[in-house]
Length: 489
Image (cartoon, rainbow, N blue to C red; front, side, top):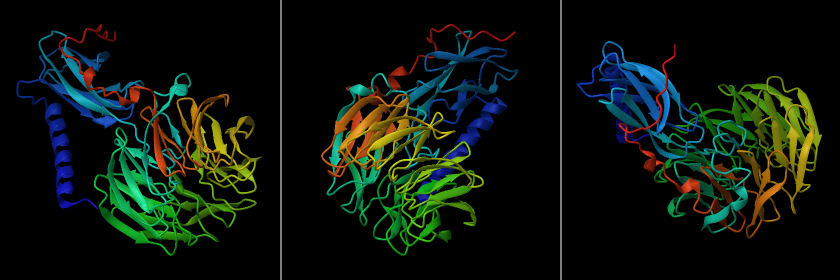
């Protein structure tokens, strides 16, 4: 829950942004050029609305992102322009960038800051596919140069998977603590005592949510680790939460899935399956999908908890579903991988492997998943046809992560692997001190993963681009030096 001070600060920020926008649109710049951006932060490819005023009409005004000229605006009779759309480049690294507006007369110029960030907020990622479409540092050509950037040692094995948000890695350990570790330095920011933590945290709106073997779901302040609230279920929780539209969805060993108010922890609804729920829910288009050891995959109305449909597999469904393009992909014990119509639950295809506890990742029309037969599989998302498989030296319970043409996954053979997403060729591996069934997070040119040796690891390129801040790119708005965008005829 936001404190009164946090609420006042947030409200004040909103009022301030609205006030600036109103002044800009009205052309009130008090004799000085001003520029406004909406939004002021986001991942690469974010669309920005640029507005400005205080220019001499009818000025032609160039709009730059860093040193690249992106658009031309024409000042109206009041010396203003509004809502010119530019896009943060796909190549923009995390850090501070600058949008500059320059009057072609050369007399007036100003700029505003835009912060590029890419976060891995929860087990599934926000797209429910364990796919990071924004990674622009690591790729097929350079991932073989990954080196261990650092590690942080906890008191016992780590089965939890990391969330990485605003430069902090959040991860649970079997030693009974949730940890927040600085992603750049590896220094401990804070830790909070819970029961044993196999659950993977989710971070939303400055709060970390996680389930525990002590039967509780916790909400902690992401900056300080202070407890915001906790909700007690009837037994252990090793399902990982998903947070969307102000609601936390999570499963429990008491056979139920819960929907909790993200701000207060109040129960909104619960649904009881026929057996324990290890599976972590996925939420897409107003529907909650999860598996149970009663052999079923369920689809529930996200608002009410009403059952929409269920599909019965041959055995336990402990895998967490992924959802992409109207299809739900999930694994089952002693069975393999299923693709089900997300609206009806009708089976579209299945592919037989060993037991699948790994949760699928979906990217660019391909489903990636690990199996107890020691393989990582790539299957055509539309047909289930096997495209390739890669055999490791142990069970693969880790769930793959996909980013920029590379599949990252752990194995019970103690290794973390990076594979070519198109061919399955091994590009890189690193041997930890024990089993790796934690699932990697790949963000900002780095790979984060836990191991049963008690460590959470960070891997990056030597002196990697992921560590470079973009502040040095701040251009002089009067010396952009790039050829202006030509007006449209």
